[in-house]
Length: 626
Image (spheres, rainbow, N blue to C red):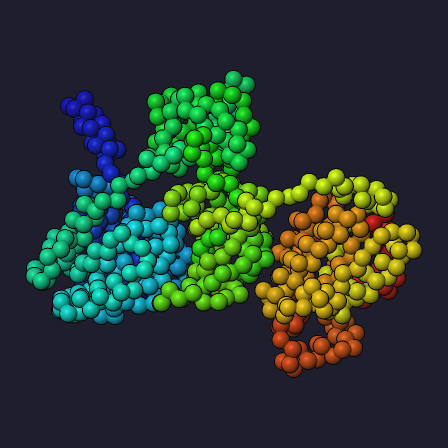
């Protein structure tokens, strides 16, 4: 008997392993019944264990919203806050199966503030079930979620018009909603939109066809999910595998580990390591502890190669005869997911597959209107807004357009200071300038120019509030250095706005661009062998960090001119602080715009305690020591 049971279990597991898997999300506006619908699917498909059912009955009495009936939404809403408020906050994944398929369903939140969670669920889904409350019709959040689903590459949509029982299953109501949604979704590029009238609460058209809608002759939700064609075609594409880890347990083994993103790989295949371009052959394909004949898309494998090649985490192994592109400038669609607006020119960490680099949004080409899809001019992107942007990265990346390859075409942006994920994007194409513009080799370099001047070039960056004494101290320091025969130049915040930056105002976006331009100019001057003094309020740490990253180790010296704001106001001969206090001067640092003090500056000058001359002596001591 035990042998038969073991055989039965093995046969069952083997059958499950060979089933197709469909990943789908449920999304829509608040209270459209997403969690209830998934709970109904789990309940009707017998995917609930006895202990879960007992727990559900108990929880329904404590948290339920359906009176004496079981509240099936509680099967999905697992967080305490979700149960108490009757809403979905986090993405909840559930698993169930039929005789034909396995399903992984992500229940995503409907509240606008949790749109980022919806995008997370959509990023790996094959299909979206977009719920609409039959009483309310197509809402703004319905449109937003549909656009995000399309942006994430979802090709199939079920338009689940829920709560039809509350409108007495009227066909006219259903038809009007379907017509409204089809008109909106016509330009989103979905391969199919299947409308289904249903009631998640009572189970109408969920597993079985409903007797309450005799006018509807389409499939039930479960029938459609079981039969819709979303077959994975990634095996047909050329081989791509981002290297996640180089496994070197001993001198005799070196395996390049990762998950196959596209295509197949076999021993003997010719592959190329990108971005270096080195070509070699596959010696063996290893899955777990065993060598296999072929690695398929989605498989986690290790490859050994016939030659010793230089490849590490972030590199990509690809089919040699059909390699992807490599570029450092792109056009991409970006979903912004942070309360603090995205500002062009600000540096972020960018993670594409297993590669992390510094990236900057150089331009917002337009922002998309959620309702109409219209392209709107924008200087920033706010929370949950979608825009098309140009991106520049610190090093070239191996990529393919998102429509071709989800793995090598998608990325996230990460705040460098907090390490929060602030944006998710999809690459459309590389900008032509990325391949048409190259560094020109020059015979003279920084070393030869600085040797001629007999000095070490540096960028001395003064930061502090308006009136702190930045320019005064920088001017005195330049005079001292000039007297010593040094070649210097002083870049002052007011002076550059008369020419180079005369087109910029004082919004956060303009301040970021102001510092970006100045930092690039300072970099060129340092490359010319000059000692550059830059005196700018530069209120944001991220921009000062961006400036620092342009220079080699030891070339950038951050000087924090630390002066209390009360002292700055007393020194204010122009009366700027007074105007800002009266509301006559907007975006004034220290009053209605923040200043972020340096955390670890090379030099800190306390000008309330020391004279400008003493501060210069302190600076010279540091410069002579370094």
